[in-house]
Length: 142
Image 1 (tube, rainbow, N blue to C red):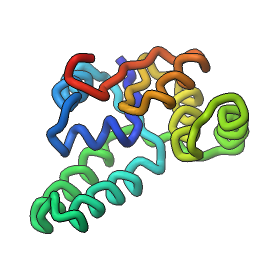
Image 2 (image 1 turned 120 degrees about the vertical axis):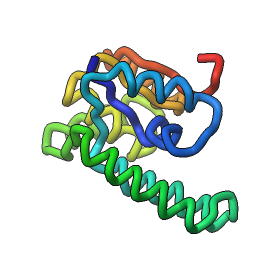
Image 3 (image 1 turned 30 degrees about the vertical axis):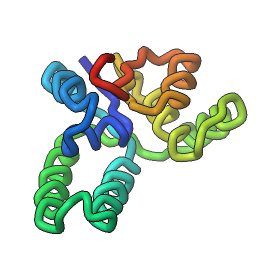
Image 4 (image 1 turned 90 degrees about the horizontal axis):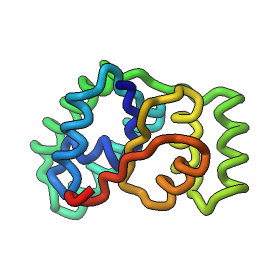
C-alpha cells in the first residue's frame, strides 16, 4: 500500500498524541511512504516550536530530528513541479485551504497514493473532494 503522509501525520510518528498509534500502524502496513518535499522543514518547525514552548527538551529534539531525517531519507519525496503548482492554485481557488496544506494535497494527487493521511479536517475534506481516499488521524477514535 502506498501511503502519503502530510506533516501533521508525520509528526505523530515522533510526538505521542491522539492518532499516533494509527499513524504507526499505517506506516507498518505501507509498502511505500510518500511525503511532500516540504515535510521535513515543516516538521523541524513544529519540533523547534515545542522546544521554544518548553514542551520538548533540546536533547529530545536532537534525537527526534536525527530519527526523522533518517526516516524521511527512506520515504519517497514528491517534488514541487509546474504541474503540482498548477494543482495548488486550483485547490486554493476551490477549497478553504492554507497554501502549504494545498501543496500537500497537490503532491498527493501527483503521486496517486492508496491513502492520504492527515489530522487536518479542511485538508482532508479537500483531498476527498479532489478524489483521494483519506485517513483522518486527528484522534485515537479514528
